[in-house]
Image (cartoon, rainbow, N blue to C red; front, top):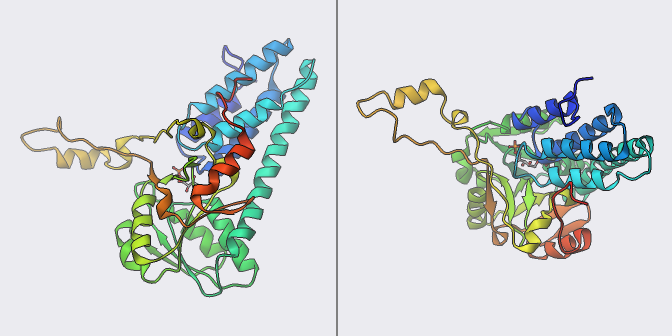
Length: 326
Ligand code: RUB
């Protein structure tokens, strides 16, 4: 199989490209794909020594890490798998790494389903839920509520510029949920009909701030003003350990062409003054302060945002380094 000079196998490179291009997207799905890629690296490695094997795995982790900066599920997944890389020989290391990645993937699935059951308890029969972006954790709550026999309706925000709301609308329709799709700017008007705002998270900071798809914070402010509770569905893998020591979460800035394709840009900037001073900014995420969030629902129970730090200390200790650091 193909490898580059660091021994990183082509399957890892292609997973990294797919994450960067958002062919693989959403925090939980990215974590799952990253663990899978490390397992593939372990199984396809031709390393001649245990040290070379470890170095290859660390290089693969770096390749995956450098794709997108905001969803902490990615470094959390890499760290978890690399910490299971134990053994004296290459074949022991290989087996341990693959087993650890498989355990991670199983736990991820289980956590989402447990979280869904907990989140479903917040939803009553007949409730209308407003969603933003596409979150598998959020959808797990709706799916579990449906399994409990409740009828749920959804108002689905389109979510410019990538329109992940379309994925949400499609998956909800597959579950038989009545869906009203709206443009993002219509959210405040439709909050009058909503019983909950339900979103996922890419990262949760130690102070309970929620980092999620851009537009979440404005939606939460409007929901607070309208008296609609905001529920964040987020497995504990979304908790950001570095924020316990004061680090902030990097907000990914994506290519401006997602907002303004070349042709449209030329139309705007086609006048006498050219386009030198036409700027397009495309932040992919924003930060919702804890005071605008009612509950963070995890597989360990639901938490007021301000108390999530207790859970973080329990799970991570006081601090962690880069995923590939021992
Ligand atoms: C996806 C997004 C999702 C979270 C949670 O952003 O903001 O709400 O990742 O998703 P993008 P999940 O489309 O830019 O990756 O609950 O599936 O982890």
